[in-house]
Length: 483
Image (cartoon, rainbow, N blue to C red):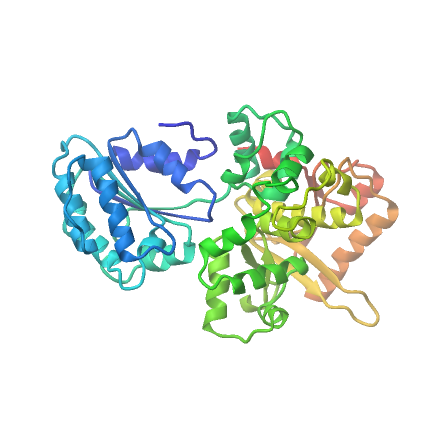
């Protein structure tokens, strides 16, 4: 097995498949570039006879059959293979080759980018169903792995299949981007050592996407890394945005319209506000696009406290998308413009940088809610994550709390998320505002729960009298780096 960093849970799942004495059928899905193919290849390549076939976006049925024939010849047969005219024929040839393999060896069949293979009228999915139900599921040494980046397609067609593959999966795996802890482990596995703060700053820009992290070079600080990845001639992430969305989604322009609208409104948009922002009408297609973006990990939906579920808000949560739309898109044109070597560092301290970092850090915290709950010691009582908005009125300004942890022990944590480069110092005025916010929330929501003001920041705050007056507890960034 090759070196796999930050995927201990997933390796545990794969270990069970290999140790099994029955046929296993695994579906893997998740955002592009998170390392799905790398994980499967690295883990299975020395576990037995391993056959890997990858679909091509936009390829015809005949093109796919041609490359499948070549793959079987190269990886399994070594001899001549006759012409293949359908996927039924293709699987029959695959069966013939599998029958030649010693029953004591594991046989791992991996179909990668499944949504690209199952083109319209190709018959692939039906042939796969027959292959599994009639043959492969009966073998005790068999492991079938199917993978796709179009998460909504994988869920509908494979995980929740209503046809011949209904309830056939023996395991499923949604591969997420790395957490901060996994990102640190991944980088250190490549002998790249950054401080926790610099890892956070890198995460704000590119998230925990494995492919992006492979571009990180040893011996550079985070500002230098971001400069190299995003602001140099031919930087790898300059042209990634359109490639990413076009490879994942059909009619991807509406997906881009939605994320671009959400990037402009970091306080989130309701369903109706989002429709208005992109000037489209409601319908099944719009709802499907929202589901596709959500399943792929680009957006998330957070309910509003004391409101019906549909009244919640959508947020852009993909770090690279937000970073691209905020900085890269306006800084370069198709990667042809060369910027100064310290372009990114020169932006630090600007008002725009502070606003971006603040919003990006909020997203980071929401993605690490489990670590926050663990640090607060409320694992058994935390019930839900919500937000709350009080519209502007003539007598009072508007108020929004982006993260509230509702609990089953008659309490709530009202979170104040702040991105600071040093330890925070709170004044009497800051304390007054925090307590006023809590009381206003209590009055307007008529909540009878105990309300805790919770500070979340990188280095925390000096626990002076004003801090103690305003906050009940705080979470610092070290909480995100604990297993």
